[in-house]
Image (cartoon, rainbow, N blue to C red; front, side, top):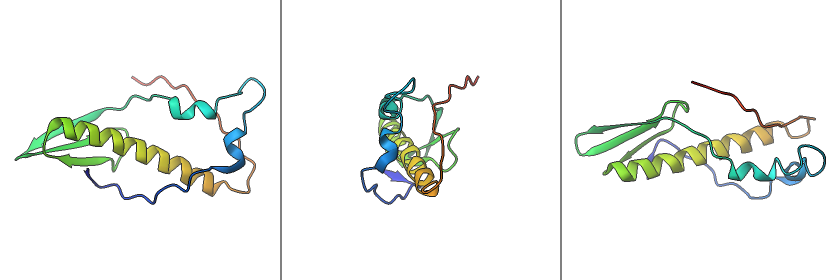
Length: 109
């Protein structure tokens, strides 16, 4: 994958927050996060012999591959890495603070 994305690998366990919603009406919400599927708009353009792709909703999420299929797969991987990294950074920044994390359902046209 050729991408503008450079990330430090995750260290794994996200600590006590991973089970924050283990009881009550939000039980299981946190654990189901990895099974969530979001919709993004992939835009692909052939430039010479390369396919360039980006995601409209995620600035900086770009890839470059030899085939359209490779660009599609690389872009999906880039989205997963960016969303995962953003979540990890947000958790690190809120360390030591009392925060509430909850899923938001937002219709966007």
